[in-house]
Amino acid sequence: MKKLPLIIGLTCICTGQLHAASIDRSGQSVAAFLQNGNYFEAGISVLDASLSGEMNNDFSKGGLTAASNMQTGDIANSYYSPSAALKLQLTNQFSLGFLYDHPFGADAGYPIKIYPAYTEGSEKSESEVVSQNLTTLIGFQPDKHWNIYVGPALQTVKGKSRLRGAGYSWVRYDLDAPETTGIGWVAGVAYSIPEIALKAAMTYRSKIDHDMQMTESLNILHPLAGRVDLGTSIEESTISTPQSVNLDLQTGVMENTIAFANIRWVDWSNFKISPKKLYNFTKQTTGNGMHLAAYYDDQISANLGLGRKFNDQLSATVSVGWDSGSGELITTLGPTEGYWNIGLGAQFNPAENYFIAAGVKYFWLGDAKAQSGPDFGTQNYDAVFKNNDAWGYGLKIGYRF
Image (cartoon, rainbow, N blue to C red; front, side):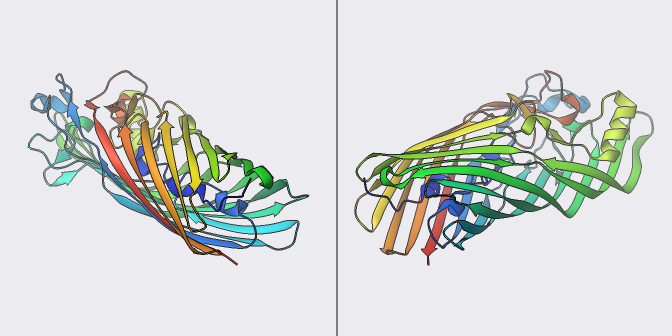
């Protein structure tokens, strides 16, 4: 069976706010490192989502009953994510790779509405998280079938968040977390039988701790004293991006045709963002410390598809994908419970040693109940987000040398 020059990852368009915890973007693939010989690639993906909901008919937080049944408007902002990879085959048995991506991120905000459930004046509840990851891998190939690899992952994270409106009991909270760097590790093993286009790889990524000096501002509405400014302070808090496992499979099913599967697990149930000033104040006043973001369940996602080589220059893929979500109750700044998607991709090889690939995906987003931080751990929620969707687009170039 002929080997196929397909880059299966071209249909794995980054899904950003569509993953379980709404911040899993790249999928953290190591497929580029498992290419034969010396290899370089660079790509970009874009996500354009529509995410809106309706406030509960009994919404009354902060005394704002007028916001019941109100449409939230679209809270999702479009974004793009770049990526790049370089793999060097140093000897017949040793390889070195560098993988760059934006593994986690968020960009959401509530439109200004006449009834301020999540806004106040010209200000709105919003959140933005940006991360970068550089993974270095050293691979050992004892024979043509096996590849054992390990290496460090250098990661940066920064973010900001604003809470406004009746949904947060008229709390005005600002968080600015400057960019910090953390180090984790990656390890995996791959097996291949080139004659039948069989490849299998399992990759583990550790959690990465970030000790952040967060600038927090807190202003509350007291029932008797009115607005009370609790000041601005710099507090040290730790955020840990989650551990994960990726399983990548492909095999030939007939001449010039392969089947592939990508399965991913992410430990979101142990992920929490708990800024110290906000957490301690809510702990003292309500008995329960408030998390800025927290999730109930782990994420499991799968992408299945077929790839077909039509001639020496043109190949294509079709795929279907599913994401479990991280629970029906989800943060107000990322209210989806998983998704289904369908994707199409094409790859053009102008010459044997380089290619251009493009892909598109359509997502049916899972319905979810939006829960603000103070309600975490209960069955209470503020709004229902239903019938939402998204389009994803990807472009990639690759070069073998």
